[in-house]
Amino acid sequence: MARASYFARLREAARANRTHLCVGLDPDPDRIEGGAFGALRHCAEVVRRTADHVCCYKPNSAFWEQYGPDGWKALLELKEQIPAEIPVLFDAKRSDMGNTMAAYARAVYGTLDMDAVTLQAYQGSDSLREFTKFADRGVYVVCRSSNPGAADLQHLDVEGKPLYIRVCELAERLNDAGNIGLVVGATAPEQVAEVRAATSMPFLLPGIGAQGGDLEGSVRAAWNGDEASCLVSVSRSVLYAADPGAEARAVKAAINSVLAAV
Image 1 (cartoon, rainbow, N blue to C red):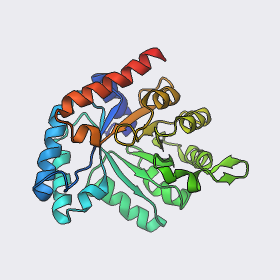
Image 2 (image 1 turned 180 degrees about the vertical axis):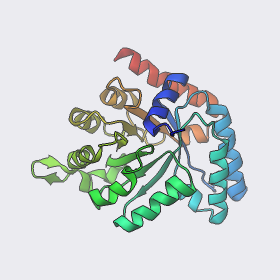
Image 3 (image 1 turned 120 degrees about the horizontal axis):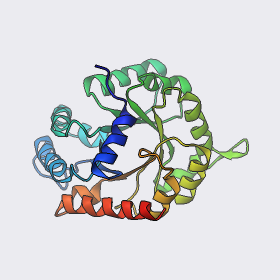
Image 4 (image 1 turned 90 degrees about the vertical axis):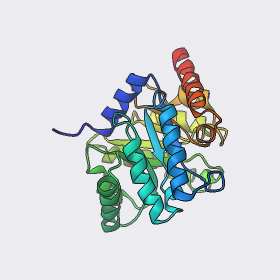
């Protein structure tokens, strides 16, 4: 039986749980005791408490790599504990030459069996195609990131348009399989609106919560009626909440409230 595509699974999970919330699973050893095992135990409990309120989970590669081999083992075990109907997005932001990207793709989609991944576009189309050719898996290309330094390069003028719009255009050209989305930071709702005017591709919106992103502004700007168009990523504010389930439910409600008014 053919595997359903990532975005089809994301849309189904969004409808089933009435949510557009993605929870990041990024353990910090300064806040979680017990090394990799403690990280696994903590994140598995967060998954257990939040599974009814999310449509995606997003472990960031660096937060598991920092534990060494035990971290990779813990991540694989954590993935097994995530309900099968909820897709998992591997936040790795990889970028390299084609043959290296092919090895990364085997690691992400094969060894780790992740449903989707984040990538950087700096090395161009041949680099990205090593991932996008896997039609049943998702790729989010970093377009306009949520950090303060985003403007250093991403806002540079490239023949009359900012670089982030050129990245959007590159992603559009590669999107034959309909499996590409864009990372557009919720800390920059004006840019979210600008990129949305240029494309109908799905967006991943990081920066809500600890980074102080504009939930209402970015959700309004990103939403286009597609259940996958507006995936809101929250990490620390849920991961370290006294009651992760209640926090996830509150963020889900806030997102849905904005969408109800659109």
